[in-house]
Image 1: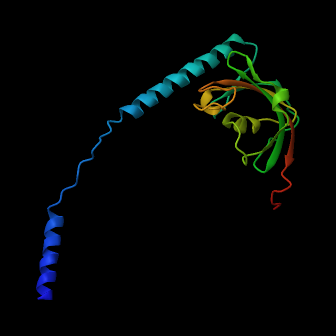
Image 2 (image 1 turned 180 degrees about the vertical axis):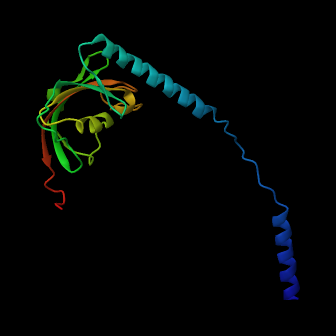
Image 3 (image 1 turned 45 degrees about the horizontal axis):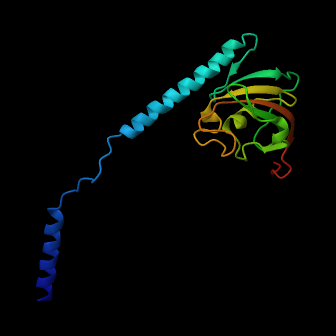
Length: 184
């Protein structure tokens, strides 16, 4: 009797499972939100790059360089004798100021002092992270950062707004190896 009941139960389970079809999702996403978001971001980047291009064209005597990380820069003071740049495991000591794309001061150099950055080990503005690694000790560089390599859609929760391109002038004062880093 137990064998018959077990066989009957097993047969019912198999029959119930075999006739069941996959359910359709309750909500279907057409992907329009993502498509609209992508288009919005493309327009934002194009607008910011146009503003930056205007700055570059308005100063034909200044030689701006393009980084492979999506920003532009020029040397206020260039040091060609020393070719050592900050690398992971170094401490970079620098000063900088922050302006909006129109040249209005947001943070002064004195407000931002002192800056001590453990290269690639601390979370700082993405553009600065990349820009500092291009510099030699003693150099002063002005960077033009589109918002996506500055503070992005979030801003800094203080003076820098949403999607704000920035102009930062950075002086790299010194580079030292991190004394806490493992010596190989």
